[in-house]
Image 1 (cartoon, rainbow, N blue to C red):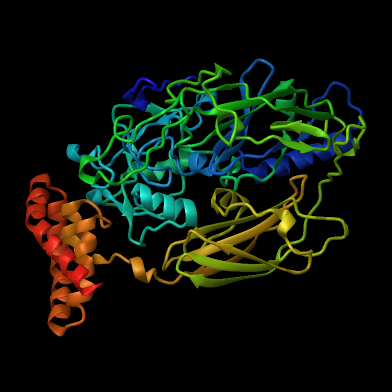
Image 2 (image 1 turned 30 degrees about the vertical axis):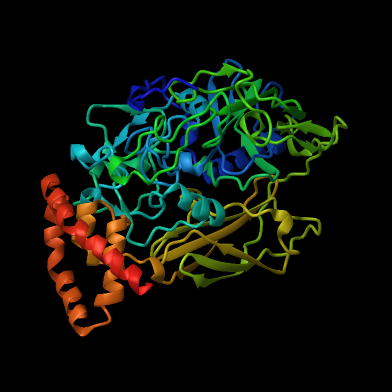
Length: 591
């Protein structure tokens, strides 16, 4: 077993300033490069010695539930350009969020940074960010998964902490977040002591509470510039294809190395075995909650290629692995401690065969001849890309089918080319009543897991997609577009829908004082009191009057209790026997 370290990720040090290309949106980059392509390929053909943008394709087949980053390094080994970062890391900030690094909580839970998620990429970018800590300043709460109601606001993405059994049956099996609409979290603040992280904070926050959110939270989006390269976590066990137009200034720094780092939580083996209680931190006040996450470190695959040379380069071997705790960006050489089968360790990218080549990680470059090069090498790798406009999605409609699901129907229109098939279909959404869908907003919105283009009906016929993991009683703005294999993108089609309330799990404001006392609206004691209210109080006139009185007068008291540890302790002493009696009463009645 590895030595059990207890480390503070604030010790991460700055290395340099990241490339400015990270801050350029996909749409802006595409427009700029399209113009440059026209100038170099059409207006000035044959200009000797001038670097040109080059289209490349990245091919890989990840297993489910991975986090990954794809990036390019130049001939000197310096970080040159980010290509893709999965959105849990790049958008929702799982590497830099409040709480202890060794918290028992999955990446879908709101607290506990994951410094080991993609350390080779994170340290190699040269970028650093302010470390995020709890806005809650109560010392007793700094090591808790749920005692932050005095500094929490509505949470639109992360789920409540779960027990191990709940995690397996809910998140893993159904992929449905069980949190009620009014689940709230502490969004954090910058470390006042100047602590740094190599990971960005979340950048999805759009609504802020002047009293309960730190002013720092409003700055997260401004310092996290990864929207243009973030993408949903791959479904897994399916071939993935990412096309990317490398800017001329990066091509000129070649030959290049294409790297992909892949991590997977709880991927343990004999060399990397971790105990739930001894190697993670268990919140003593919520000891049954939280999921262990430590396992084998991230693995790195890489190939070196000259973007100006048309052809394919691939590898079947991972080249090294990161620190198990993410402390540095060190690349450790291959050894027997890393598994290489059953989707574990070095097998997180599956072996695949395409166009006669067998590999786990591969890059095909169209070369300096670009889209007109054809299969000049006769190697079976062909491209037929051209820069063109694609017609807009038609007849987009949204139908609410449950509190957490919406069915979208639309038509990908027929094309002039009868052989055309979309390479990617992208569906994204944000909450809110009024959204102006620019390319920048689209790139920054929440991405629905990608749809396999092979499953789409013929062009011109309706397509149906069910969007899950939504929140009850929210207005969602949906946007849909498709791309071809050359990164050409259709205009954005949009539609709005408001989900129904989540009746069977709604947590309303009845349990103000209990929530303040026990730290979270999902605590067992709060649930027992809520069940007693619904089964015994609401059905009677007297009970209903009592509930209404409580609604009117308990919030101020709850706010005082939430901010005072001594009062919270006294409230728990008073309410615990009441909660126990309520649990027995509801159990006896069969409710």
